[in-house]
Amino acid sequence: MRYFTANIDLIGENMLDNIEDDVDISEELADTSDLPTSLIITNVDSNIFSDENQKNQLEEIFQKFDEGASFQYFKSFRRVRVNLTNPTAAANARIQCHQTKIGDNIVNCYFAQQITSTGSKEGETSDSYLQPPSPVRQFLISPPASPPVGWEPVGEAQPCINYDLLTALAKLTPGEAHELHPPSRTQPGIVVHICEDQNVEGPRLKIVQTRRPDSIDSSSSSSPPSSPTS
Image: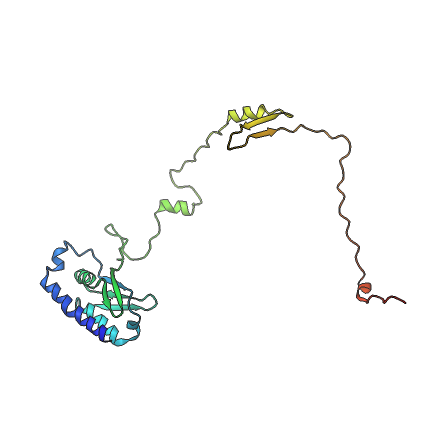
């Protein structure tokens, strides 16, 4: 607890004094209007979520950059979301508090993802909800019952006939061996032997089914075996 308080004082006094002595960060940044106003603090000490004093001391660090800052705690992820009122204060807190040891852990500060509006043209309603895809993509997702205006069927392509393959198949005569791949030192040769057509005269052989074993009588199976007579 003593180390946490000393660390808070070090951040609150020395770090802010350095900001006043050095060049203002807002002057170095050309434009901060496009920056987010919220920060995500990761790797937060787990004791901060249960101890109200440490939680208040953590809030005092970021309230020195912006008195109107609000906080959202996510204990399961060990993260804290800090919502500031302007992008300049968020940039100052991001630069000064990143990789700073608060409690027993060194925290990381990142800008939260901005929610951009979907309405880009004049007259469009801008909201943060997901909009349906354009009509062109809707035809691909769910084809309509009737084709759209201007749709024309695509003609089928001509079949590809491999005459070399047909010629090679025609040269295969029964009873002869045809070498498809010559042998080498590392690979064996591939030879195809064409079988001749065998015309079997007479009736075909009938496949005899396997005989089902005889069933054992239940009464005889339940009776114990008779003892041998002397």
